[in-house]
Image 1 (spheres, rainbow, N blue to C red):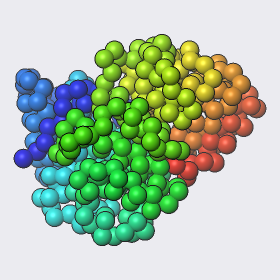
Image 2: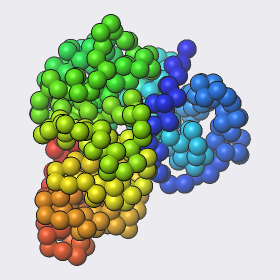
Image 3: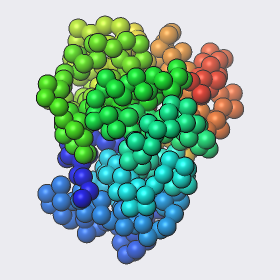
Length: 382
């Protein structure tokens, strides 16, 4: 039976744009219109899961069907536009079970898409199912599978998915999953760790077929406080999406309140995680919110900007990185470097020459530094 994502977790998931395709190919109406009318939300979610799975099976080609589903669900708007990624965890697992998927055939069914919505969720679901095979392949074999994918965004999503896979095969215990991530090497381990911590915070709510354990730590200040380096950022990044704060983040003040008393990497991770839960889907609106912070908080907040929302428009890409010029000093440079790197990732390097179109030599230099880091870990991202 397909597992239903919780209402709070589903509604907190970002909706990310894709080329608009209006209508349901099967019915000529808005995608899943019958599901949209169902109540409560848990019933609506089950309906969409069945519909999505049936669509993928009927297509006989998940790799090409998923990008279409990204577009159709986003055009439909509402619940499914924001919920497709978490719902696809269950759909991906169900599909993999149905076709007896193997790690060797994974590349044949992974979506031909950079989209972090339906496509990424489906890929993560496949990897969750493949956990035992991922473990058997060893770190080199698992990493080789991800690095064979054709775009940097797909490689990143696959490595993130390995973190989910390790958590599932180890019964959602971080103490086993994180060492497995570390064995992938310094370039992949941070992004795998983010997947592992993401699964931990999902498990803390008992959703998505996860296993809860007695004494499970639900305070990020306690859990993340024991980690060091990039694992601190990975630990904090998804917590407020999966466990929304009592008062939604709507301003810089909301971020400061959530992260009061924290310092160094702990504060950096908290600020990024709090910003990720902010009540906005518009990249420039979140940049504006981040600009009202100070010091290192500004760039850490920018880690949550949904850069993937502008990857179909060179004009919007340039508009996003040009917003860095409104900042000052280290914040401006950090902004240029982060957007240069992440825009290169979501465009698979196509953004690189666009650094030359920035007006300031300072911004052009920062952008190029970021672009050069396209292969480096992302740590916090879509």
